[in-house]
Length: 305
Image 1 (cartoon, rainbow, N blue to C red):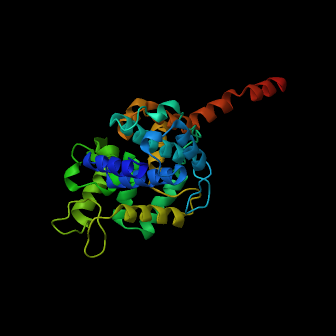
Image 2 (cartoon, rainbow, N blue to C red):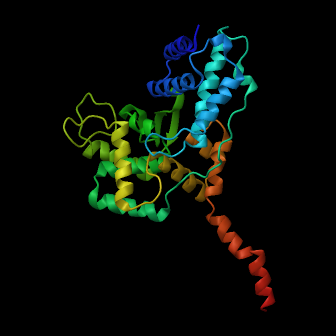
């Protein structure tokens, strides 16, 4: 069996295992890249060095849209796809060993997540009061209050919301079901939106719908465009996109005194190390305390007394 045939068999197995369409597209892209680099060799001839050659090429690959070299996080995802494929080959007795057992995952840059500030959040809602709709405001509130991902908000249905008890059911990565809490203000505005402002046919189950005929569910792209458009209109610098709102929610939760272990459950992180990044971002108290207790400042104050 050659590599191309093995990839096709692997993707079929993933589809049978109910892997999402978006994930399947990513798998196919990375494995096609893998074949382009090392060639359509026999599966039996696959070696650790082939994986290293592929990862070396990934270090030079550029983003098709920006023209910049892909990030270390993207390279890590590429490696993870190849590693999962190689493990499948070994488990299917198609290779004598799992070749990635003798390779190392690439190091990733430990970059701090980008967030928007309280002042920028204030400007956003001021803009929405003037130029947005009530639906737009509730969408922003939902992202910032729950920390949900784009796909989770796009997939949210009326039956998933319990306004009286203040929670929503969402389906996250790997189609895992989770419960996210909602604050009082979000619950009040959601109730108002659903019962007064939402226009949708009786068979439309999704919460957030278009304001135009035929009033169907907003797609992921539609939600993303809304978030990016408001970012741009308000003049916020840096990256645009819904995931920044997830980072912002997490940072504000910690800044307001929330517990990191509770935040982990809200964000549904499998590893608390992922959640702990936001503790470093919520640095307001740290900076304030340092100003009061700075060794150099204290030294000069004593010297001038």
